[in-house]
Amino acid sequence: MSIDLGLLGAHLREHEVSPERAAGLEEAGYGTLWLDASPPADLKLVEQLLDATTRMAVGTSVVNVWTADAETVAASYHRIVARHPDRFLLGVGIGHREVHAEYASPYGKLESYVDTLTAAGVPADRMVLAALGPKMLRLAGERTAGTVPCMITPEHTRRARATLGAGKLVLPGHFALLETDPGRARAIARSAPPGTALQVTNYTANLRRLGFTDDDFAEHGSDRLIDALVLHGGPAAIATGVRAHLDAGADHVGIYPLGDDPIGTLRGVAEAVLP
Image (cartoon, rainbow, N blue to C red; front, top):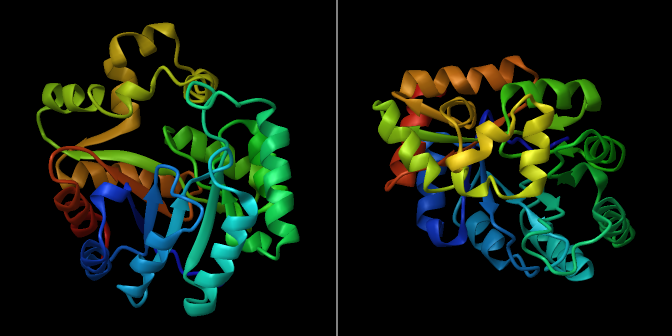
């Protein structure tokens, strides 16, 4: 794997990111900018973000198999890497049955999508899957470079590493909020993902495997669950949470910033975590 992802990644949606912000995050020390929330198949914003930076990798977290045509995505991949070799990682995911009316046979659909990308010349070591459960994790390990999961805990990272083994990428994403008042931090988290994502079957099924129950999913998340899914407190507390993933076997940790100032949160995390 010749793409240098760095220790930290920044997860941002299209409305939160710009070429200027990407350049600023590169300056802050982020190794990867993850473009979230099902980017369109042309991946034009990915190219713009790479144009605006010099070292940072850009990844998709994730291209949605129901909304992005695989052949178009493959063509976009080749266009991007022709200009920016070794700086783009294609993350692919299955989406959610609550969102896509056509959702069916998720494993077969994702496997077929990877088949199409591979046949179109996208290298396996330039793809990762948003895999949560054991079956999808095995697919990620067998057919791609690894996994880029979210709504997870360090225990999931440990299990993902055990499933994928050495030599595969485990790239967890974790929510973070620079807020030292626990009550306020939990309220903010419950009004945004992850609290609002607890109606999504894929996430709750995975969290059940990690030991959470119906009581944890009620009222947009118990304190126990919110504290597990959201790193909150001062920069040092968030740095400790990042290190927990690294200690569990992660190669890199992506930060999903919460609150009114996502870029400020990302800068604060970088100052606490990076040497």
